[in-house]
Image (cartoon, rainbow, N blue to C red):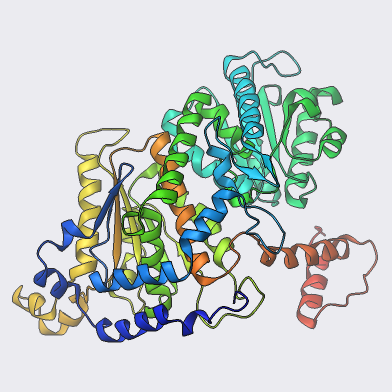
Length: 546
């Protein structure tokens, strides 16, 4: 807990919510809607072109009032101000948390240690734009003089999940003459399949690594380098076919990349928040600087909404509080993100890192073990395919799984009735989850008695519906910022540091120890547990044919 503070679960706001939960935990959404015919039009938030319908939740006006009381008691407003001010909220690494600076307009002032970082951000954006335009126009040539037609982003974690998700989301706005691919898995299959049909003379690699020492990224980069040089047969080719997103000019130069083609970013930007930075270079090349700036403007608009809007009309605050209601009082262990748009096929994977790496913490900012649940498991995929897969569990399973449904009123690819069918499925699913189908209703349809239990839907399954006019770069930026700030809301209330990720480190450290044990020419002296030792020995026996 924060030093001197009352434990979260002993505070008056938390206790009031706990008492309220006991009073309404069995309430049925059918009854809530029956008693309040205007509920569906009232429990909404319409802001920034995003329409959030949260009426299909197991909550009342009193619930929302008490949740807002909790937000105020937790100092959420002060926390928001501190983030935008550049305070060092990442207490374990003594860093500011300023992804909002990446999309601040020129002329804004956001300081880190007294230094306004906005001019530096815009200098990098301009450098990115110049480079992207040279690649897109054909001015940037490969070593043999051929035009670049393929762009391969090499990164891992936030250096991959953000760019690939955004590229897929905004593919409709991309230059279709460019082939854009993403490599992240250290499994050689990833880089092999991503380059198999490409011409090295027409291929540009963007290597994303802050330190330029990330094991997985550098392994893939070195393999890509070797692939390129086998065809081009001149080390000087590296400088025309590789650029870097990094802060380590020395290592970049050792690789063969001209440091002039290194794009900088900063330690006050966490990897999972880095898409609007130079990490988004591959995206800018694909969609162009103008569209990229539209995305940044969308991010900034949501930032300002989050910073200034009253909490009861604040999209990220409402989403965060409703999610917390289910995690901490109903005991929900997961949340499904269900976009009804094919372009958002990688959104749930991106939000997995954003949410689970940020709020998957068991200690508070002071290092004390918490006695309440924090980040939920995030999962999902685009509808309608999920309806024929895991929706069964959401509708009739034993687990409570709150869902966010995300839909658009206009398709980027209008064809016949396709989009109306898609939208009808979205609306039907939220209706079915909320209201279900009672045994009596099933019986009246002539269902044999033995099948009635199997065809009964309990309903009362909570959903949020996020409805947007159309998927544009600007709206995409708003959507991603919405979820970023939702995570901040929950982390602030839970009193955890949402901006470190020590949980990913231990496995990496052990892997560096194990790698030479797998490849040693002599039997290594294994000092792991008996399971790990046995696995290593079996792998050594089978790793080479014969």
